[in-house]
Each structure stands twice: as C-alpha cells, then as structure tokens.
Length: 313
Image (cartoon, rainbow, N blue to C red):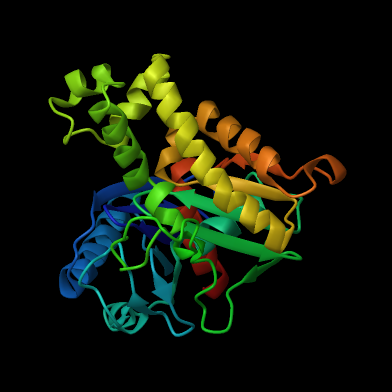
C-alpha cells in the first residue's frame, strides 16, 4: 500500500492506494492546511497514521504533493499560498519519523503525472495540466516524461504576468495569472459583479457582498443562474489567457483542467476550451488542442503523489 497527499493553500487531502489499482483509493482523509512548518508536519504525520488505521495496513512509502517551489531534494522553498512556511526540508523531516521512502513534489506536477499515466492524458505524450484551486499551478509531461526544470520549480505558471497594470498579488507581483484564474480569483470576480448589482442570488446566499466566495458561484451555476454564468464566462476567459500562453510555448496535445474548481464540471471546462480556441495564435490553421477535465478529479494530486511514492518504494 502507498500513500499520497495533496497539500494546497486551504486543505490537505490524503489517500491510500493498493498496488493493484493505484487510481482507486482504498481510504481517503481531508484536513485543513496549517500555515506553520511544525504544525504542517504534524498534520501530515497524523493523516498518514489515520490512513493506515482506516485501511488496516502499513503504507510502504509516502508521496507528498505540495503547492509551491519544491526543489530536487524535497525542500519546500517558498509557497505564496501557505504563508509562513519557508525552506521546510519536508522530505528529511518526514523520513526522520518513518523508516520508509518519502517523495516530495509540487502538487500540480504530481497531478500531471497521474493524469498522463492513468487519467485524461493517457495515450498522449505531451500533456499540460492546469490545477485551479486556492491558487493556480501547472504540471508538464513532455515526450512521456515529467518536466521539472533546473531547480525542480517548473510549473509555476500561475505567477506569469497576464496584466502588467493589474492589481498586486500576495507575492507583490502585479497582474499574475493566478490573481484572476484561481478559486480566490473566482470569488473576487463574483464580489465585483455583486457590487455592481448583478449577482443578487449570491448576496442572498452569502449574507453580504464581502462574504461571497467561489463556492457560491459554483452552486448558482449548477442552478443555471444567468448572472453566475456571466461571472463564470469571465473567469473562463482569464483562465484561457494563460492556457493559450501555454499552448503557444509548449504546443501540448492535451490540456487537463484539474484542482478543486473542477467540481464545477462541464461549464467550466467547455468555457475554458472555447476561449482558448479563440485566443490561440493561428487557431484555424493548427490542430486544436484538447481541453479536458481531469478524470481523477480533485484527487489527481494525491493520486499522483501516491504514484511517485510507488516508484520510490
């Protein structure tokens, strides 16, 4: 049995998988992310212990996918969405707790590996994954192999600038893709619409304009609310700006949309696909890149971490 964890800006998702079917978790648990190094390590240790108890078996190796800059030695150098956790030697800390292999990787990179092998990218050798969650991460598989870059930091596409005169992000940069095309960005777009008087249903649901979050848009889109669909279309346009940039640079066969926002479903994916095809250079003179939902859903990052753990066992 192998363990995989996906640690984002707000949640920790852990799964235990069996070697016979690495994509069907035997057990799964969820907890909140703690923005403190020691507390985060404790959360991981407790979750692994709970997963072992739940599945009734020891876990021979552990993979951790975490949002941020993870170097080749398994050190989380910096994460803008897990404030206060810097230069955390996560692999060393966890290996000191257990006598088992530990792999630490960027969460979107782990998700890309899972989707390329067993999900929406299966059968394609050039896959780009875009994880839309609290932040925005990407992972790449080129010619059937994970691409990590020189330091291991490849995939931080959420921080590429898409609007030079845009507002300042938490990183201090102006107008990065993540500011607009993340769960946080969706909530911001919804609040802006509500402030204009265009999203009354969300105000009623949330109690105030300032309390509106992306989850309210999701619920209203599911009901076919026209104002929510307008907000979602604007969000999809911003998401597609970055996706089109990735297509221009990388020329992938398929772009997999993953992360927590994938639960919005078909309206999100089809909206990003439609805007991407409008924005890509020479769209009428090239094969259209596929934009597809992650088949492993919001568990793609955790399953990918488990896959990497199985390869290290």
